Image 1 (cartoon, rainbow, N blue to C red):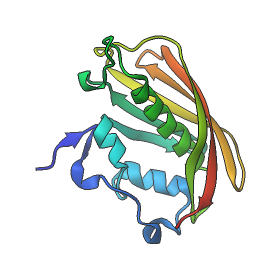
Image 2 (image 1 turned 45 degrees about the horizontal axis):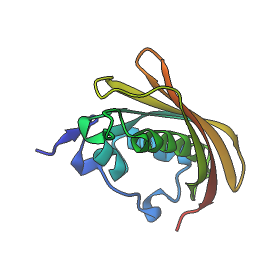
Image 3 (image 1 turned 90 degrees about the vertical axis):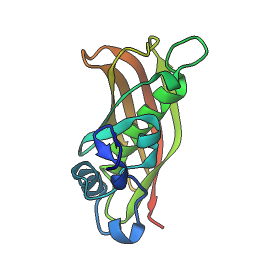
Image 4 (image 1 turned 30 degrees about the horizontal axis):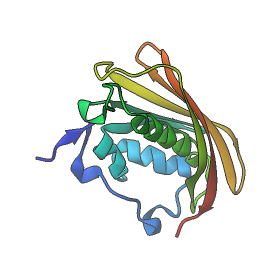
Length: 164
């Protein structure tokens, strides 16, 4: 039996095949990932987080930081936070992309509000589109716990480009 991480088994982890997804809008791709009809990115398995919801201009990832994500001072490493927020913001922009287009991060800025203890529990990275055009999109993100307490916030610019 395949290991379960963030509610998904390893058989449902992989990269998208452009020939399979080229006729789908970005939102349709996200919906199919959530339904398990398309593979979810391998980074989620590596870092214990998962896409949990998506709608036009919005994507939410959830994960639990483990002790293997700690920095030398015993708090969750900023790279874990950055990866969660980058994923949420980029996928939010992806939900606005037309069929045959993918999204990649051009740049992002991250602000930490408070440290994250390893026993904090489940975190949600919420990405929301600010604007999305034919070639560029911008989004904002926030990382919160189950009580909606803010731990970090961010902004990004993404390039929208044809699938290879």
